[in-house]
Length: 337
Ligand code: AHG
Ligand code: MN
Ligand code: MN
Image (cartoon, rainbow, N blue to C red):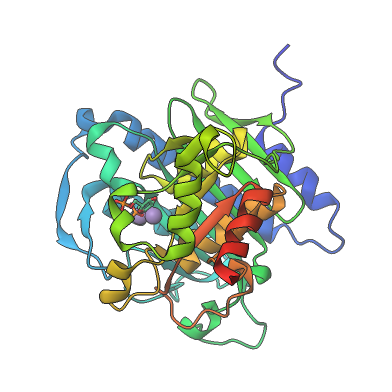
């Protein structure tokens, strides 16, 4: 039987029924986000066949060379989400300024932030990439949304999710009521609920960090990793496994599936550049922290809970340490000492 499968559209509408006074705006917005991800998935999937690999030959506001797929994915997200009247403005990793909804469209009550293509250094080598998004409310009295309206702590997120363009295309979503995973059935063009109620095991013996930065790490991170690497003979008394995909979406998905720790911590190299971290608070850290916490994990900068941070700038970067709860508590403890 195939007709007893739950599509993401059905899931979203059924969720909406539990919310008193829901107008359908939020469901409509999520639907448009899903459509955008399906279009990006199709493009990523066709890769060299449709000439979308390689560099776009320009830099974004982060000072990173944009891939063609970064630019195309950003455009797809804008076009899919600007017209329907659910949004007041959008903000993206790939755009210096916020994107207010053009006057020709109705203006709605939500704000959308996104990393249109995460892990884009992986596109040319055919390794998993993804899209990350977060939905915030825009205050009722706002006439012209500005950057200021986006500077809300992660605890204010209404929803967050990511699409993972891997061996399967998946969509993982939270609206603050647990985490659900959907797999794209390419034949019918629908995401099907395949991973209801995703949870992160509290314990793990696997961690992910870019170890080429080891000489720049701060003592707490160095201590944690040293102890993991010491294995059975060391203080942890167990062997640890290591992974690094360089797509945060793929790392978080692995952690949601079998547990683990992901770290892009503060280090001396990042500090020397005058940055607060590597990953972006509004497009990467907050949405992933929301998902991870909703799945029973934890997400910190080292010293603080990511979702409690008061953002100070649109493109603010922060250290990110997330995953299995007991390991994150241990790492936080190392930072406090
Ligand atoms: P993006 O492609 O959106 O710029 O993000 C890449 C991020 C993250 O996904 C990944 O974990 C990290 O940067 C990889 O950094 P390194 O290249 O330093 O390993
Ligand atoms: Mn990214
Ligand atoms: Mn990106």
